[in-house]
Image (cartoon, rainbow, N blue to C red):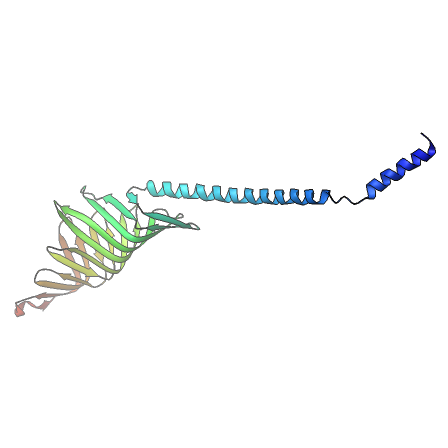
Length: 227
């Protein structure tokens, strides 16, 4: 190789090194875009996986309760699960069934046994073809204890015999005992009883009134009395 040829080769390599590489820029941009999409895909995939695991755990916790829980639809917001038209079925100490339904229920996964219910209706079997009906505007139901704190207007009744109205009450479904330390009003066929507090025991078909009790018997003016 002559000196002239060597010098020419050096100039060619220098020119090639310094020349703009326009064709490499689109490829680099495409690679960067692919990497960004891959990262976003990984993030979304992990998020969906975590959500799926959480929902499966929530569903299992609902199904493994000591009662039979059925529902139409659930929604998730943080650790709180919204349950549309939940229906809970359990059994009392005497073996008779009860059904508790609501328009809406909310369960916090931090306290999975507790439900915040609204629009509550309960049916407690009392005999062949007979049942006691219980309603309330709202309730906090503990599935583990079979116990509900009822509020926003409470009624427990049997259409054939009695109708007991209260503001608030506590219902022990397992023992079939309802108690309230607030004013109660009981209506029978021709008798009305008002009291400061009450205990109603379904098994014994007994209501015990506490505090000031006022009784009115229709058709007998002499029977109107306070106790």
